Image (tube, rainbow, N blue to C red; front, side):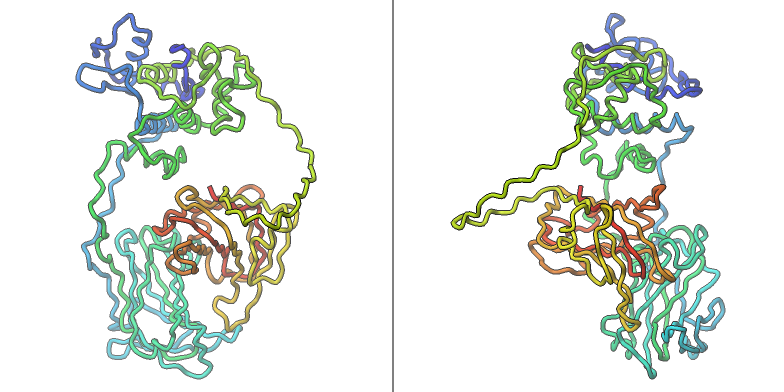
Amino acid sequence: MKKILSVLLAALMLATGTFAAFEKVNTYDNNFSDVKDTNWFAKDVKSAYELGFMNGKAEGLFDPNGNVTVAEGVTMAARVHAIYNGNEIKKEEAPAAAPAGDEIRFDFDSMDGHRLNHAVGDVEDGILVMKPDAPNAGGNFDLGVFMDDLSIDASVYKTMKVRMKREALENINERRETFEIFFGSEENSTLGAEGNFLYTVIKDATTLDDWYEYTFDMSAAAGWKGNIVQVRFDPTNNNGEYFIDYIVFSAGEAPKVEAPKEPKWYDMYVDYAVANKIITKTTFADYNKNITRADLAHLFAVALPESYFNAINDIKGIPDVDKKDKYAKELLMLYNAGVVLGDAEGNFKPASDIKRSEVAAIINRVALPESRVKGTVDAVWEEEKPVTPVTPEVPKADENAEEKEHVATPFDVEFDDPADLDKFAPGEVDSAEIVDGALVMIAKDRGADRMPQYDPRLVMQGVEIDANTYKTIKIRLKAEFIGEVTNGYSTDIYFMTAEDSNFSEEKSLHPNLLSVSEQDAEGWYLVTIDLTAKDNWKGKVVAFRFDPSNNNGKFSFDYIRFE
């Protein structure tokens, strides 16, 4: 029944005390020749137009039987959220990019604006010369230079280049040659905290004996944003005399793309929806295709707080929706809130398209709270019953049977089986065990001459993950650091593919843990990482390695899931 279906999402903006937000902004005077007074949707089209939610598809036409696209659905959900919360949706202007090669350069003509850290030295003939003043408590040297009172626009200057060389003194250990950058911004001035840190181990440290230029991608650090006001560069954890010719912050080369993306009319609505967690960047692949009823219902259900949908019905199930279906929970909530009752049999038709006339009715009911409907649906979802463990019958071995090809399945490990220890092969740990449904491992101290000194990891071999299907990894973990957090909150992911069976930096991600996670009330971090951030996440992934942190401590994993 069209009228009942048109109730879909009707109450989604009817928060108590906010009805006045839906005010008429247009005057309707039979604007559309294809909408007659006798049509069931005529009043809804009039109201939707007057409230400014919908316009015609072409001059003088409304196209009531036309479908609604994903872009249009996201746009409506964004408007619902914005009006409810008193926000404004506006086009985000891209930051002004510096021309290729634009630089902020420090040639060290003097020490003005600079100071040394755990070092002695001065500027000599345009070269900063410094050496450590003393080893620290761990026997390591930690010299560096501060650059103070900066004003570097992180959205423009994303590359840092250093030209330097070294003369090694006694106690040199080339495995400890590590470049470190600490920085602070107006938003977060704490050096090394929340992503304000980058480091790299110089694998061939002998190159430092000659003039050597190293380039850092500063945008790899989560905290490199806003206005950078201070930078500290530490060229080593070793004993030696270090010579720095220059430090340059550069806009870098122009992005190498075939052609710039044409702006779309719906970009600002999509950006708003992503920023306010109505959708993610990967929820929809095509914004021009028709949206389904289920997707549209979900968009509006998450655009407003769940507490807003007070139940006025007592409905236990939906005939054509299974309890385990995607968005089943949200749909049942909408049924009980009187937002939708389905057709005459209570069917929702979740995979069907939705017409513009029906959406007009939705918007009309959004604006008018009396439109919620009471009713019943003759369907009951069965309650889940406890599963009784059954000991499976062990099949007899067939000596003549050929080895069957492994079938890839969704990768979801809950750590409720001691066998998971073998599957994940924890490395560089003092201990690892399954405790109360979690994998708990203690980092191993590899010695002060190793860099990093702590490197706990999980390595999964022999998997088959279709990278075209599984594009996100979700991990629930808890980190209890011991001692100083010396290497920031960086976490490491490496993967092998069938085409390239090696772990390498090319096939790796190093996100800041705090920037890709949310902490729940129990202290667990819910980590979500978009694996498609690497162009070579494609084909068949056959091995996977996860390093939670290069720090000392205890690391607990509740689950690891590919989705």
